[in-house]
Amino acid sequence: MKRVLSLAACAFLGGCSLLASNPEQELDEVFVGVNYVGVAVADVETAAKFYQTAFEAERVADDALDLSEWPFELHGSASVEARSILVRSSNAQLRLMAFGDGGQTGMIGDAVSVKGPGVAHVCFQAVQESEPYAKALAAGASPIGAEELVALSSRNPVKYGYITDTNGIITEVEEVDIAQLDLPEPPKNTHRMRHVAFATPDLDAMTEFYSALLGGQEPRRIGHWIRISGENVDKVSGIAGSEIEMAWFQLRNLEIEIAQFHSHPTDRQEAPRSFAAPGYNIVMFDVTDLDIAQQRVIDAGGTIVGKSASIDGAVTVFARDPDGNLLGLQSLEPSSIYSARNFDGNGT
Image (cartoon, rainbow, N blue to C red; front, top):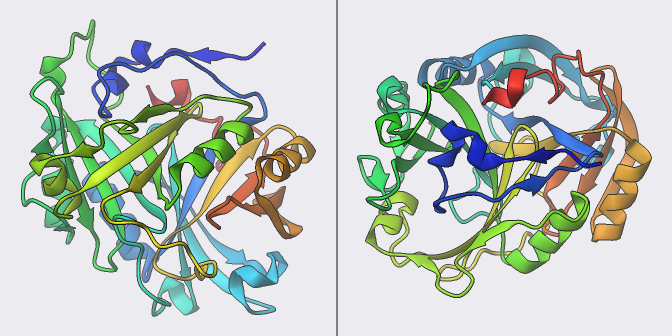
């Protein structure tokens, strides 16, 4: 029987998103979470300090990645080394990667914009009193839209903003006014990663893929009949005249957000982005059965990339969704530092 996660019962989560409430979701028993979201950065030490300072992320691993066993098309060389630092929030992780000597390198290409294409941002949510937005700006980030965080609705106790680091990599910040929520007690964790966000030219195709990939889960959707728009939306996105449609899928420890900018159509990627381009380069899923997971990818309309590799002590398979975004399928021991299953209560 599938486990059911009542998002409405997770009080700290209840204030987020553009919806007043979230339905119960049946969670898949094959795709059990997101081990980490990969991020290519120019300097792993500087990047790690940024997430530690702004979002109280914990630095939990520092190692070297030998990409020689990874599919050739990902790195374009028979032997490539990267330095990796894993930073952890209460429920999910970022794997920072820098290619070249000493964990520093010139970046290849530009970061993805607000409207993509591809993995556009990750979102950190925190209680307002911890002031993550101010700390992020003090640590060198710059706002994309309005200088101050924006409340999209007077009924929603959340303020939103998009920021970029010095390499143009986007983070969404959500500050929650806990005083406006009817909580029996304060949240155990003051910070968490809320979601990883894809920007797409075709929301329907992407939602069909991820619904099939995640065992038939139906996403929450908004903006299908009436687009998400207005002055406050423009202040967040930094795009005048934004008209957006969105969908969300829930895994145990992290949401997948998918957005289509109908007002400013997202270009379809002509070729996959370089793995070393600045920004988010892979979403690594924790799966219980690699064979079933691979077949799900194929049946849903995705593709398998190259051959499997041994990463983090586990067989890892690479895949792409219909937009060409790189996904990893990895079956880890729950005790592994990289596993999505080693978070107490999934960070709630």
